[in-house]
Length: 110
Image (cartoon, rainbow, N blue to C red):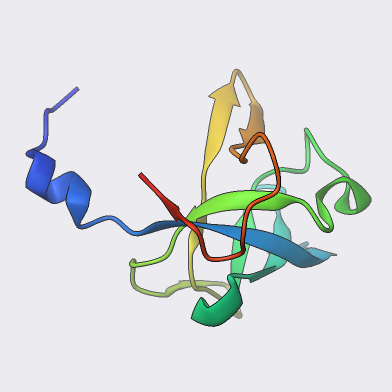
């Protein structure tokens, strides 16, 4: 693994958001959901996340997640992903990273 400078880490904007909507994403190459996430005063963003082996849509709705916000949009088929939800990968499953208790939407993660 390559080391980065601490200054590089400081450039990353990780925030907590609340999942508002979850939709199936059959056009994705790998099974995924389309998520709509509320980051409070930072706005609402959409993303695609490969969470189908670990969660149902109802599992994810209203859950808080940690996402990287300051990355450029990425086109995935006809969908534009506007952030990146963080997850822990265990074999083929992905589990969302989330705060241990409810925090204000848009809270910074350091």
